[in-house]
Length: 216
Ligand code: G3P
Image (tube, rainbow, N blue to C red; front, side, top):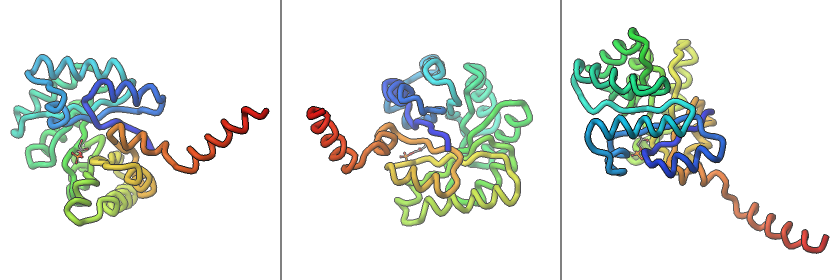
């Protein structure tokens, strides 16, 4: 399973990249707004800065909701760098746009996936990635991991090449369970990635080794 970081924060992206395990980045309008990125010029520059840090796919989301504006916006985003993947919402115009981008050699990530039916439609339109929102599904008292499993089975049966990008990850357990359920990629906040490092027995064991090393 590949690891993406889900943030627009450059310091977090650098920190995850320095671990040597980072395969890409996903952003969304909420994450960009959180970093105070405003205006077309600054938005495009911010994506270019991210591409300079990470050697991997960077999802850049369109802000428009109608087909023609999505196409114009997506073309500009894709022109920033070869690693930009245009992130498109799961709507009727979004599906039309994904098909258009696919036919024109621009890779897409279909976002806001909450059902297997949506994942089938996105794959059919040629999306490179689908992003099921695990945490938000769990928040609504459904099972986000079960959706990953279901999409993974359907894609295997049907031979779809679209990769499953588990999103809306809230903790390290979500990452482990996404891997078990067949996600191709997990996109996580820095805290959840660092959460994988933690186990109290590791800390206790290391403290003992350090203490015993003094007797050597
Ligand atoms: O990038 C989309 C997704 O990861 C959002 O996560 O935590 O806002 O549900 P969250």
